[in-house]
Image (tube, rainbow, N blue to C red; front, side):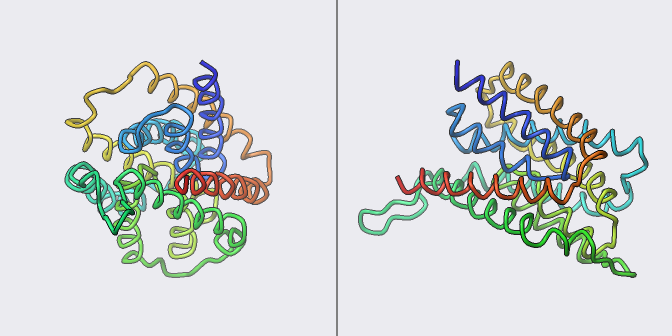
Length: 264
């Protein structure tokens, strides 16, 4: 009961992050589901895609009302990304053997590999948010590089499929650095891309997620939605760069906890 209550409290953090920064919350969802709720990693990545997809879509509506969503760019980015994430979920993740590698007494399992990759992505995301946010938020180019947008969509799709993260920590810097969007427009557009990626990715799990705990999944998603609405509101009143830095340190700390658990 205590763990369930804690997971719901952290669901608010997931939503707040998505609403404030257009990303980040998704990389919190899997660790919460695995280490707090006790859900096995592969199933948790599927749950995460649903939670993040629903939450991001609701958060996007707040930015859409303010005309801070670039629909054309979202579609351009999302098409290759959605195709990639669906293929990865449908044909790769669930077909990986439980034991990926064995050297002597060391055995690398699928769950350990997924959580290790997750920790690595979290560290890279945290470093970007803490030390490179000013660069990503301020640099602009005159001619958007749409080839880079498509390529970034594929990369985001692969990562989203493997680790159940929406990819906002990659999408926001990609569309600010390479496509010249202001940061608030980038956040709104990122939320639309994340929602499309995540929900399409979740459909690739349908034949495997036979034991979905729908009451818990929907309750967690509802609380995260409340968080994202609060995040969108607070984001209009608060220094987004400072919040992103604070959240970056939080993500880095969580990644270290995951690595410690893996080593144990």
